[in-house]
Image (cartoon, rainbow, N blue to C red; front, side, top):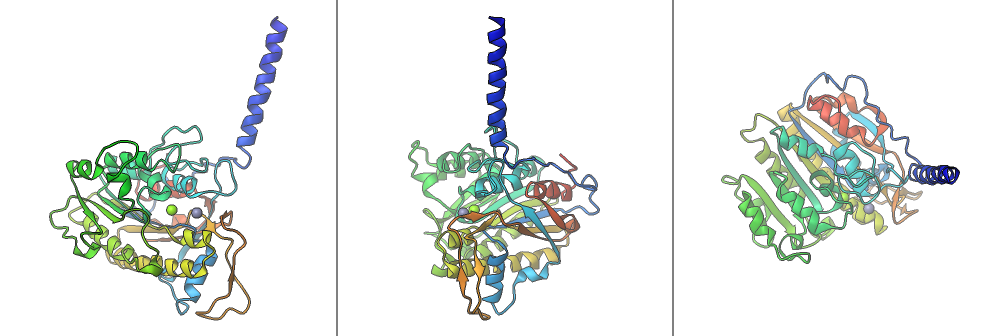
Length: 379
Ligand code: MG
Ligand code: ZN
């Protein structure tokens, strides 16, 4: 009997380790905390983290060559590359990609602010709130979409939108700007009216139906929830133009009478959607819209001197390439995929602490580098 128990134990161990091996196909789970991160040479008061979803090198190149060979991104001299793969897949999705930035961990595709075990992990935005900084999130997707969601929510699955916005309710986040009003006030999982509940929690809630971003009077506003669309906002090519003014409004608001600093996430969400649709014009117009916003952010950071701007993507989308026969402002392009690819992803950093962002490193290192720039030490 004892012998059989032993055999059973051995067999179980084999099965478990087999399973672990399968899960950990790629993962060496490198958690290399690089030198000097404990004592950054300079400390950033504010961090503006900008994600161009699906923005690989070719997406940037196509924007550049379709915009008379100039982008605001060229104003940045510190450039690195990150390895974007997920915990269990060389090809990441936006949920695992954003969770790596927000929490410093590799996780499975679809995970929102949770580890491979589905257990919540504190995000840099949540830590900023706890430390008394102001925070904000702006997206050109719905605000409950994977990228912003991973910074202020914890969910085992990215499409649980109505659960995700419930996490926002207690986030303390001073600025929430994006589409997806229906997850707040026309819910299927319950009858709650989150527009009312956010108002009760100190938010001024405004819909795009009533006011454009420029028409919002911020003088008496403490926290702002602005719905830019009922579901997904329009593409830039169809007239969506709020990302730059929303970023300027948010920076002004977060910086006003604020000694403690802020963390702001700005996402150009739809570069990715152009890749999925194999639509080069959509990629280019979204890229230029995102770059115009980068210009406004850099204008502030240059003047302020205490703000670190970090710009990157979660992954490339489309296996996008610029082909022979292309001319300046007239590109011939091809796609090899309608999904994400495993390309190394560029990182652009400007401001105090930018030198830590040189080199090639894991996507999770962005989390550690940003914490270090805030002077929070290693974790
Ligand atoms: Mg996204
Ligand atoms: Zn995508």
